[in-house]
Image (cartoon, rainbow, N blue to C red; front, side, top):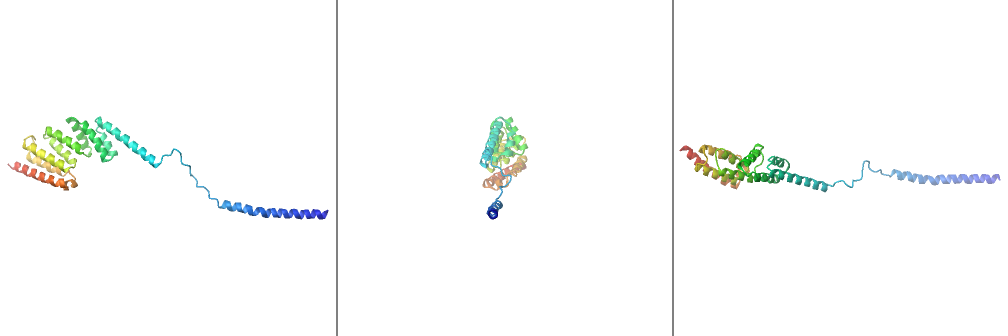
Length: 229
C-alpha cells in the first residue's frame, strides 16, 4: 500500500513538471507576439462622411465669387459707383472692366458721367477704353476749357496710343475752329505734352506710340508757330 502511494506521488510530480514545461513556451510565444505589436497612431480620427474635399471647396469658392460678381453688376446697373472699388479690390482686370462697363452704360448723361469720371480718377482706379471713349464723346459735343484737360487726362489713363492720338487731333481741330474758348496755343501744347507722359513707357515705345509721337510733334509745331504770331 505504501509502495502504491509513493508511486502515485512520483507520477503526480512528473505530471506537474511536464505541464509546467509545456505551458512555458506557449506563454513565451504570447509575450513575443505582444512585443511585435505596433500600436495605432494616437489622435487619428476617421474622416467625416460630410467633410468637404479640395474640389468641393474650390467649387464653393467659385460659386461665392460668381455670386459676388453678380451682386456687383446689379449695384453698377443701379449706378452705385462704389461697386467699381470692390471689383478692383477683389477681382481681376477682366471682371473690373465688366463692372466699369456697366457703370459707363448707366452714365447716360453728362452729370452721371462726370460723377463716374471723378470717382475713378479720385480713387486712382484703372480707366478702360470704353470709359475714355464715353468721355471723348461727351467732350466732343461741347468742348471747353474745363472739359478739355479732363478728357485728355482720362484718355491718357486708358493707356492706348491710338486713342490718345485721336484725341490730340480732335483737340487741335477744335482749337483751329475756335471751339476751345479760353485755351491758348501754348496752354494746349502744355496739356498735350503733359498728358503724353501719363502713358506707360511700353505704350509710348510701341508701334502705335511711334505714330502718335509724330502726330503730337506736328501739333506742337503748329501751336508754337501760332503762339509766335
